[in-house]
Amino acid sequence: MSITVLLLLLAGLVLLVVGAELLVRGASDVATRMGIAPLIVGLTIVAYGTSSPEMAVSIQSGLEGNADIALGNVVGSNIFNVLAILGITALIAPMMVANQLIRLDVPIMVGVSVLALVFGADGKISRVDGIILFILAVLYTAFQIYEGRRQAVASALRDVENGNARQRLTPKQLMINVGLILVGLVLLVLGSDFLIDSSIQIAQVLGVSDLVIGLTIVAAGTSLPELASSVVASRKGEQDIAVGNVVGSNIFNILAVLGLSAAVSANGVNVSEAALRFDIPVMIAVAIACLPIFSSGQSISRWEGILFLFYYCVYTAYLILQSTNHEQLPMFSQVMTFFVIPITVVTIAVSYYRSHKRSRI
Image (cartoon, rainbow, N blue to C red; front, side, top):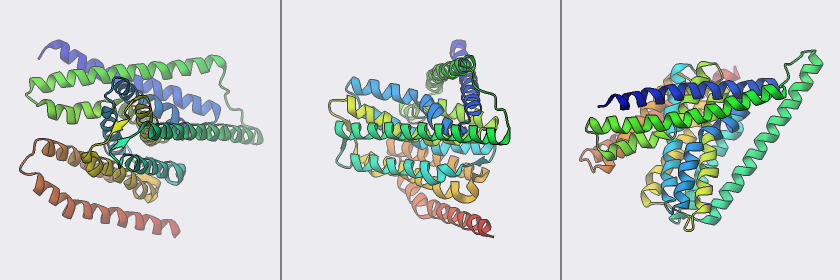
């Protein structure tokens, strides 16, 4: 293993951390000075920015006639975002969840996930389907911008009524923060590229198959910017940005990334039978799971973070067993179907019931 590969790995990690730090700092300062809720910033600026790798890969694939890559990219990233990123950030510190996410954004995430299944039920997401998805992305973004401006005006009026002098965002400060956001995004993309390339080379040296590399390192690679940004935001106490980043990225991935990929491709995006039968339903399931978990005390506890991480490991293990036609796959599937999943559902239901009962006392 060459020293160059190790240096590339280290450089990737450093760029991810520094890029996330700059992005979160710039975004949170803009939100504070303009009176916009950090959640709105997380759902838009941070979420869309950290999803730029998925957008770049998917659109390029669509233009080159390989738009089918976009579906796996989007579905895999959305599953990783919820199970791995929220799991890791909740382990760092329990995450408080804004009421808007529970009432509006998570249901939208569930809805667009189901819409992807409906559009793909005939085996293809056509160009017309893609245009519809992209129009919905524009409408969702416009709503978030309107909501952000409404909150900014309301915040300014409250400050005037209370005699508080909020620090205004001067043109110079705006340029500095925009610069921090842009530089942070560039560093995140470069860092994820370095980390993916070096990790693949290290895995090959260790004798890991290309299949396993593709199912693990590459599948999660485009979500590294979201992971780094959410972890940094969590450590800095910007929990709305951390959670909003995940939910906003998932919505953006389906509506904008998948929508544009289908729209620019002459033949749309093909949807395999395996994706319809397993991967997309898993994406919908993890989106739905967010509702009871987020609602239980309006937070994501550490044990719920562990649960998310456990299921991501299970999902990855299933993909590896399935792709290698491993003899233990049937037993693995039965254990998950008849033992682990029912216990998890009951546990979440009991937790939600107790939390709801406490809130009514």
